[in-house]
Length: 524
Ligand code: KIV
Ligand code: ZN
Image 1 (cartoon, rainbow, N blue to C red):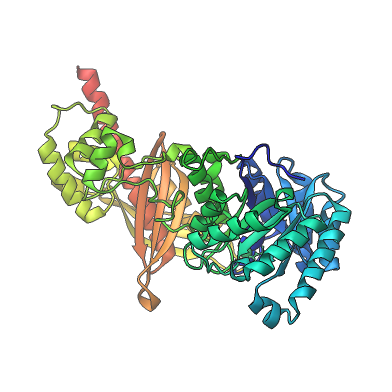
Image 2 (tube, helix red, strand yellow):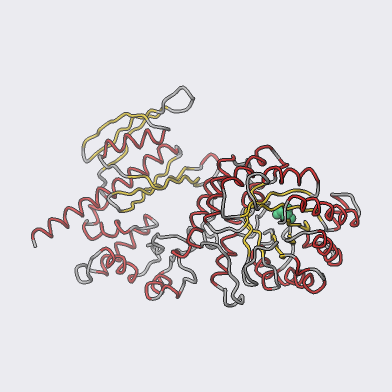
């Protein structure tokens, strides 16, 4: 039973909740898995491998719950070639959804067959055939995987694939379980299967590539060029060891290079990729590296002056896909010491400052010294350069003087006292919160009178061992504009306070600028 609409469709089989979850230090709750599954459904994933029901009651319950709640993706459960595993998948899904998939697997490479399973290859073929037949008693959609296919002798692989199809498997998955093969080699395996297995047209050929040599995505795409029509992948490339093929990479390769790939397409809703990536990273506690293809924070950031100049003239000079196409709306041109005059002028244009009302050379020199000190410069920093002199720029309205925090223990209400110097006076506030950082933030809000909405909070360790400092970065929204604050301390709560006060100082300056602009307008 195939879900392919035509020979150009590529089925996206997501294994974030199975292979991806397997690699996490601790398992996800049923609720967390359901949240991810609903997000995958919105992403347009065709099949969600929701878990391995025999492995634990939690996995069983997760597969069952996801089967009940998700309507537009087919839900699949994994099983070894063991009857009770297959029964567990069927048990978890048969009463909750009318179309589900049983995915059963057994290893086929010599090293796995002989050293791990301690069986003959004939035994393995028999177990696979028996299991596929057993699974077909429950449902029409049965996938069979030859674990470690990448290292399986080709004659064995052809024989196993032919036998599994004859037994009723509707999808045959060829995993490169240990990420060993190279694209040309892996493509050759798929091509040989199409040439040598007589009943190959009765099943969809799938691939499941691991990333041990960094080849997972390349191998998957090469397999498509040789006739595979299902890709097994995971959001952010999560999975055992170095991970699986990354869903976002394969989806965007197929979309961006469709004509090179003879019109292949998927059902992935690309605009939901960024959201899915962030949700999976957050729930799994596995941050996305900044340079990660497609979804990394720097994937669309242009830093050098030459690149920024090119992008301002025509985005396609350095962007083969737009951030909007995966659902990112943020500004992707970061102002740093590498930015050129053109970039600064473009940012001031966007803020509404016409050329001629300021001296670009002077502003640019001051921008460079600020960028050297600060790293990234934001639009409100640039605006402040127009309104404040160098010495005024150094002044801050709010400075943290002292703070005291009580937290920890289930009987203690997190409480903070904070003293801030505001102009020339020191003011003190005390308050509670849902945690120590919240208690401190509540005090700062009352002291500064700036009620902003916290939209991002991030802690990173700077340095290592006992000398490490916590760097806290916050993004806050105030009057429809985003502000950033950074704080560094060996105490992460103090770093949090410094970050929020930093953002409040920028907001305070922006308010002065707004007032001056208003007065200027009125006197015109
Ligand atoms: O990597 C692998 O071989 C697997 C199978 C269970 C498909 O994850
Ligand atoms: Zn795997």
